[in-house]
Image (cartoon, rainbow, N blue to C red; front, side, top):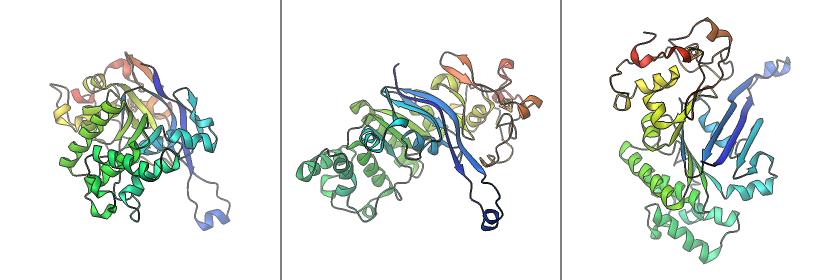
Length: 336
Ligand code: SF4
């Protein structure tokens, strides 16, 4: 499949905050390595699911791809254009083709704007339509996402959470984009509403020929809708491959631990429940060697000093772990 989006060695590091005393005494900045040397591609019409715990850098990666957060290093190519090299005007034009749906349907909509203004704004920004024409286009997309055209002059607070997310989806789609970063679009919604929004996103993808980078911390959602999956841990991709292959034959211990918490998609016959020790380490002070070693039940000495490199473990399937050759699986009770 021809990649529509290609991400090469992308990094997003932030300067950590310093206290007044630290600033006055010249204590150097700490660095938060939110996204570190990430490479991936998304084929035209594909859904790449990006999975990982809260705080692992998934949303930062999605935003860095769109340059909503400027990356520090690396390259993003979209349909042959180097997005990272675009000047502000060219980037603005590119944004028509690359959109985002945000997680929080409450915070992402301006409470002082009507639905018509919120959804119609991209048409105005990109000079695509104005006046009655813009209102007609806005009404059509609002109806397509399941709201009514007579709700155009209402404000966000007059809608439920699910309806607000539909407004966010309409805003992302109104400029007729090709690629959408879906940044945890259902995590803030009730379970019953989640299913409706996922069904809507899949329908729209089919109708409009869209390509998604779908970000979620829920592996059952990712397993349901993705073609391929990338597993992220502390700012890095630790495993990536076709979704059926990664779910049936997870090779990285972190992926295995994520799967162990979801009985319904757990590979047949594997019942071991993996409980990881501790929390996700801080990206301010990531562990040396393999970043997962502080929580990995399979960690050995080399894991504490040397970072594993990603290697092929099957067609289109890669993982980064020193113990791949041993074929260990936490789901089979390894490391217990
Ligand atoms: Fe665990 Fe070591 Fe593999 Fe990292 S490299 S996932 S610590 S076994």
